[in-house]
Amino acid sequence: MLPFNGSCFNPAMFLLIGIPGLETLHFWISIPFCFMYVITILGNCTVLFIIKTEPSLHKPMFYFLSMLAVIDLVLSTSTMPKLLAIFWFSYREISLEACLLQMFVIHSFSAIESGIFLAMAFDRYVAICDPLRHKTVLTNTIVAKIGLVAMLRGMLYISPLPLLIQQFANYRTNMIAHSYCEHMAVVILVCGDTTISNLYGLTIGFLVLLMDLLFIVLSYIMILRAVLRLASVDARLKTFNTCVSHICVILAFYTPIVTSSLTHRFDQNVSPHIHILLANFYLLVPPMLNPIVYGVRTKQIRQRMLKI
View 1 (cartoon, rainbow, N blue to C red):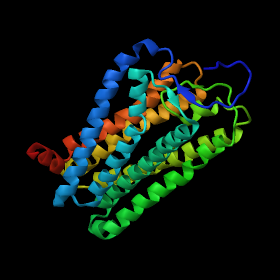
View 2 (cartoon, rainbow, N blue to C red; view 1 turned 30 degrees about the horizontal axis):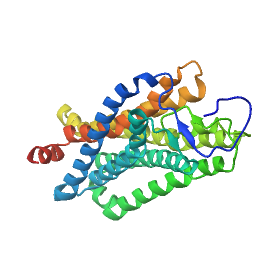
View 3 (cartoon, rainbow, N blue to C red; view 1 turned 90 degrees about the horizontal axis):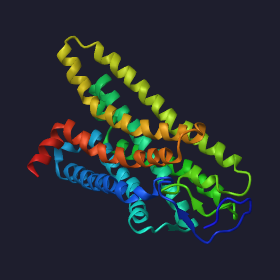
């Protein structure tokens, strides 16, 4: 383990610190993290099982929800086993190849999830603003193509990030001040000019997350206009109620990820452990909350859960 001393070397292995400044509390922090991970696995697997076995749920909205559940399982599983190994057994070692693979999975599937949220907003827009065409616009084939495009977009956009880092052989230290291989946490260790990598990371964050969020907001503005045109208050509430679950999971996803990204890049006064905790929350909390929100808010899923 080499500290920052101005020299550069080619490390055989990297060491994930965990949560800097809170090393003595790692065991206690691991308890709620493990609890959230278990809920994430059980909740998302239950949602997938219910949607698969219940023919009445074979609709675009629930197909997108299935995609969301798979993405949440991948995101949480790509970090939590290693995180718990750090907290419980002090198993901090990770190879460069495994680190770059983890980075690719985390960032690409976050971008894919953002695309699925945008697709779900489009589904709600068509269902409310043009209900007569909903079944013809969002057929099973179209839903599958949308999911495929979201996956390819996320992977293609994120692929250059690990490739840009891999071209550097030397690093200032082999200690990664993070609990997983996040892009910025690895880039700052590189010996060399990382301007391109930094700019590309910022550009992708803008194009994927902020642009998706902008289109989601525009969709809901048009949905709100359509709802307000309805004659009765009961009809307005009933129609808009179909969007509440989606709005809740969108807020749960975008709020921590935007906050973490902005504070990590622009606010140097925030303590390192706050950065790391925020970064872990956006990979833990949304995957845990999504099946709970849809399980509570969606009548068909709730009834099927009660039967199980």
